[in-house]
Amino acid sequence: MTFDYNSVGSVHSGVYPSVQSAEIGDTVRFMCDSQLTKRWGKNGNVLPRNAKVSGKLDRILTITDVRMFNEGTYECILRDRLYTHTDTFMAVLKVDRE
Image (cartoon, rainbow, N blue to C red; front, side, top):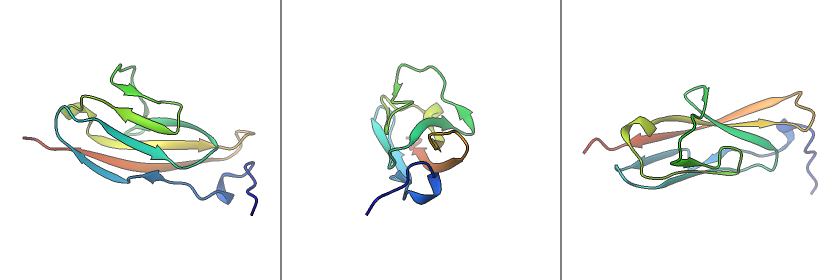
């Protein structure tokens, strides 16, 4: 089976896990399952420059030393090669308050 990577809609994509719970100080990872051009965002914005968040343009987003401000909805934003179509897949990080 061959995939047409010029069309985002033809590729099965998503973020795994789609919901994650963490405690303060944990490390969490979200994987965007796609080979298309991608970037990560949070709550509808570009990820801030934060040394504890890596992989902003990679398949795997890693958040180390989780804090309360890391809680939120993360988006994997996919674009086709021609930048004519965009899809967004979401994942939620919940941080335990205790």
